[in-house]
Length: 96
Image 1 (cartoon, rainbow, N blue to C red):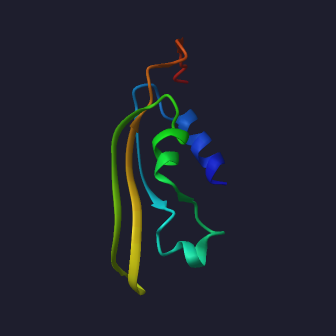
Image 2 (cartoon, rainbow, N blue to C red):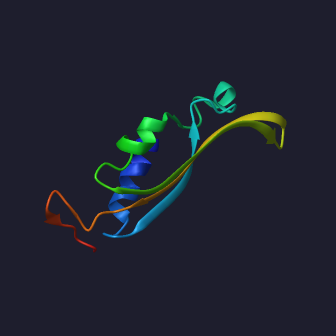
């Protein structure tokens, strides 16, 4: 499901356009109870696999003990901003 969503996002963002997301990391406390419900990613997946050929504008990583609405929680988050290139593999991208 997550891979399908990323494929849709990559197709929808126009050349030069930005995409921003907050993503859960593999050390996030929600993984214990929600591994089948959410996608939990390694940092290298966020950096290289999700948007190959795109420019990584910003990636902030948070990995800390804190609080959630349910009480104590370990947070592992990626705050991502990436830019779709003007062209992939030297070919123009249609903006239709």
